[in-house]
Image 1 (cartoon, rainbow, N blue to C red):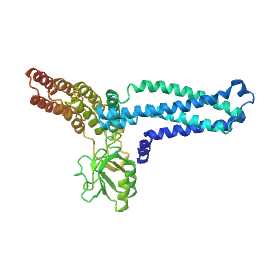
Image 2: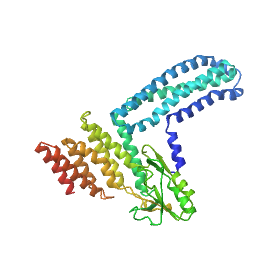
Image 3: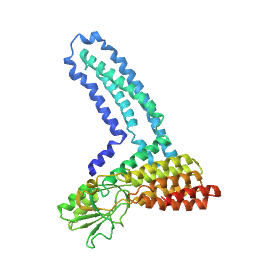
Image 4: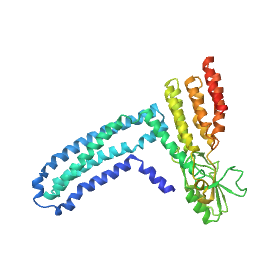
Length: 420
C-alpha cells in the first residue's frame, strides 16, 4: 500500500477516530428528526405516545456516561495487564482491538445522541411529529446499546488475557508473513547480495534521524526512479534500525538533489517497530512472550510451549504454495529490494526460547519436536535452519540439564530431526 493509505490505516486504528465517527453519526441522527418531521401525519404522535421520549433520553444520558467511564477504566486495566503479563510490545494490538473501540464508540455516541436530543427537545425544535421520529430512533439506539452491552460482557472475559493477546500477535505475524511470502521483494527486483550488487557509482541516501523503518512505499520509489530513468536500491527494509551513518537506499541515474528528499519521504520511520510489513517484529514479540514466561519470576513453561506451537504455524506460512507468476511478477522494475531471510526468522523465534528454556526438559522436548515438523518443510531453507537450531538447542540443554535421563530424551528427539 502507498504511504498515505498506510498512514490513514494507522489513524483509523486509533480509538478516538472511531469514537469521533460514531459521535458525529449520533449527532446527525438526533437532528435528522427535525428535517423529516413534516412528512409524519399529524395525529400519529398522539396515538403512539411519543411524549415518553424525554424520560428515556435522560436515562440514556446518565447511564451511558457511567458505563463509558467504567469501560475506560476496564480498558486501561487490560492494557496494564497486557504490559505486565505478556509484553509491552503487544499492548498496541490490545489498544487496536476493534470490539473495544466499537463498544466505547457506541457508548459515547449514545450519550451524545441523548444529550443533543434533550437540548433540541428543550428548545421545541422537534414539534409533535419530530418527537415521534426521535422516539423511533431512540428505540433503535436502545436495541443497539443492549446488543453492545452483551458483546462487551462476553469480550471483557478475554480482553488483555495472556492467551488472547498471544493469539493476536500470532495472527498479525501470520498476516505479515503471508503478504511477504506472496511478494518477497515487495513487487520489486531482488537485491540478493546488497551492497555488493549496488553499482559503484550509486549515491547513498541517508536519514538524519535514528529510528526503525515502519513502512516502505515501493510504488512511490518506482515513480521517482522511473521519472528520472534511474534505479533505486533499497538498503533498509521495514524493521531495520537506521541512522545518519547507514544509507537507507542507493540511487543510480538520479542527479537532482531534491529527489533525495522525495526518496526519504517513501520511508516511514518511527521510534518503534510496526507489525504491518515486518514479520520479524511479530516473531520477536512471540519469542519475548515465551522468554518472559520462562523467567524465574513467572515460571510458566506452559506458555512457552504454547508459543512454540504458534511458531510452527507462523513458519508454515513460508512453505505455503504461491502462484509463481505472482511471486516473480515485478511491479516496480526500477526498484531493488533485499529479501527477508528465513534464517533470521528462525533466530528471532527460537534463540531466546532455547536459551531461557535450556534447563527445562519439557521446553527442550517441545522445541525438538517443533524442529522435526519444520524440517519436513523443504521450502525456503526451513529444513536447513531447523536442523541448525536443533543442534544449537541440544548443546544448550547439555549445559543446563543435570539429569541424564532428561538429557537422553532431548537427544533422542534431536537425532530424529537430523535424520529427517
